[in-house]
Length: 635
Image (cartoon, rainbow, N blue to C red):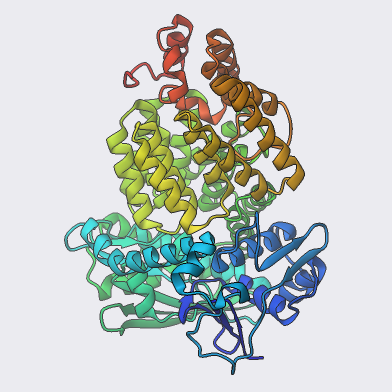
């Protein structure tokens, strides 16, 4: 079967495309290959080992289980299939997966027809939607997405500075014939994004990696991509690697009329890969007449050679870092350290290591007290070797603020990062939530994170963190709307559901808070019976004792495992619970532990709504002074 049809979806094997109601749906190459495998074996169990052998082969780098889980999650997002109550893709615990959709032969219905499940097929559209609320929500979401895609280019151009063009670096194609080399092409893409971001920030903005990588393996035209992202220019490229030789091709396309503005190809040793990146950047700059500073021109002209083995480790580090899991960060730290061992003067590897150490505590690799000093050391070394790395300045700023509470240095380093690469969504994100929000500078914080969201519109962490930024500012309606927007992008992002649960709890809407926390627990893989028992315990406690019952039960959960990401299960979260219960001294005791452990959340102590009742306490005021947030806006 060349075209599989089910519900309103169709999967075209030849076109390698997923469509819904005749419209293409964005899905990456690996999830698409897995979807085809599941459809070929529809109704049957496909084991995880079979998936691994078919999609990744025998030699796979990174966290294999996470790779499969991520692909499954992306399929569910594309199919709008709720994992808590799946209708299409079912998980067989400990075994694998099964597609249970009734597939229609390609000749049976027109390509754009919507195939309804049998019980709904004979009902009028409105009645069918009312009988199936998920379907109604899907239709509404589809309409909203269509509107968003239509107006987004105009919104983004309106937000950009006059005379500023936007470019997206599409994922470079791996032409080596070996899928295990994908990380090399992906690394080339990421490096080019960083290179272009620092060329002429006043006149050229660059879409961030997360959103650009969504188009990996896409069949969409450059015109469709340009419309969805609101860009003026697209850079396409390919990489063919053989041993220590690499061939890179690149072409620049104008979105308006699909004109090919510039193209070139390079056959070089891998040791000259940085020179290739500089040559591509120079070619683009010359074609669109960017005004390069003397510093940028010298940097492009002086691109150093790189040890091929060290560069290999560096790219593997980037690949693992972008997985954003516990195992991914462990792999990234090891790979960046290997690169540094082979080339002790490799500034980019030090910058990558600094960022890995910076975020690893959030994913439970180790403690902030252990890892942030290492991040600080690596960032300082990177800047000594190359002062022009925005990522290194950002890691230094984050480490100084969260480890030493050295806010003047943090502000200076964040601003330096923004100066070097205003197109870095990560710098805008961390400047917003790591500096501006803690000091109660909410309008500025919101403006910064909105820039990050424009540069990386499909980044779930950024879209969700915008919700937190609104919540910190006390703009609860906007926070709720933003969390719902993140859910529309991906209903399977557990952290967003947990944050939404926290907001509902802050507002006293406990039934909704309980429902959202249950979704977060389900999405993180907790046993269904355990999830239901947690939900029942919270519901009964609220019924019997109101707000106090809810928080007392949360206190019990805090000492149990597992819990969802960002649950109230560390010292900072326990402090929130005690504050909500009115036990002020216990809350401050927990905050003292948070301070001693240098938990990342400690910088939020001045803006956490639960601590409003503590602000008159002398111990709390003294704690604010120690954290350096005595200038925090008064509530």
